[in-house]
Length: 350
Ligand SMILES: [Ca+2]
Ligand SMILES: [Ca+2]
Image 1 (spheres, rainbow, N blue to C red):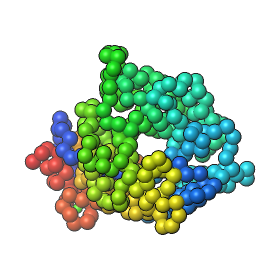
Image 2: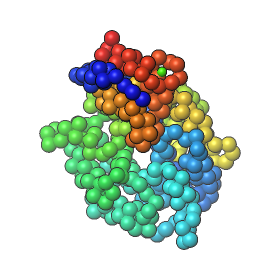
Image 3: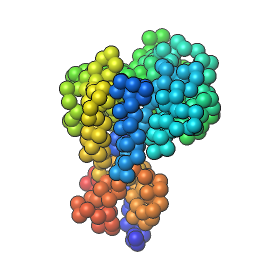
Image 4: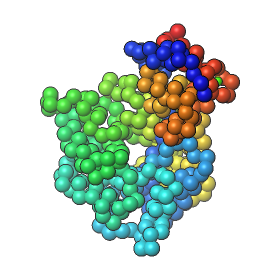
């Protein structure tokens, strides 16, 4: 599509502007802690494979793989059989992003032990089936920044594309030792994504009060895990979106094992995962967010131009950004030059 050079100039000149809108491109992060051997496990894993395989899936599906509170000491054939079949390779082949689980016990587990567990996921008996690492029991003390940064660096040294998700499960960070070696920003950046809420829905609706360091971050930086919902509702996902988190899991499951069941808290019967997927699809974009980071700012200009001039290249770079919706400023269900004015207006705050 031809774009007037004067228009491109206007787009490129829209610099120095603040973020206008924070809403959502949600990714689902499923703590798939039920073993596919038994109870609700077979159904959970079948449903995960079905969701991952669906041609209609237009979001990234992350699955936390936790065979034995960590990688375990041998292959569990319920996940992976000796002939290479099983729910784990099926899920991975269907395009789900598999995060291997490790627990850091609030930085009390030795780095050497965790590195050995990470090795098992990437180079040991789970090799080829794991994409990233989920660090549970992340300390909220920013003095531990160096510890988590070292783990992240280690993962990246093995697999530069791997995502490291850390889970303090809490939205406020502390500095009890009054150290000044690390800043809150460095703490948040010690992992790729930080889970800043993991608790009940009542806590989420009444007591969520995030640390100031969490404001204005792109949505791939934070995630929220909400359990003990009375029902799955788009209200919950809209709240997650409005709070700027890009990774979500929501379930009616309850303590002590909210993730050993499906999203409707069931061990058997119809799954809640499909319902969660439908709700995510209904809440997942913000007008003008060309690069899918949930913020609208100058970083979206190059994506906007790419979508206008080379749609195939845009799809290659941002596969889950539906630019026909996200960049349709004049509401005519198409994306073309007629949408430039609305985008410029939004960026310039007019
Ligand atoms: Ca953006
Ligand atoms: Ca349009």
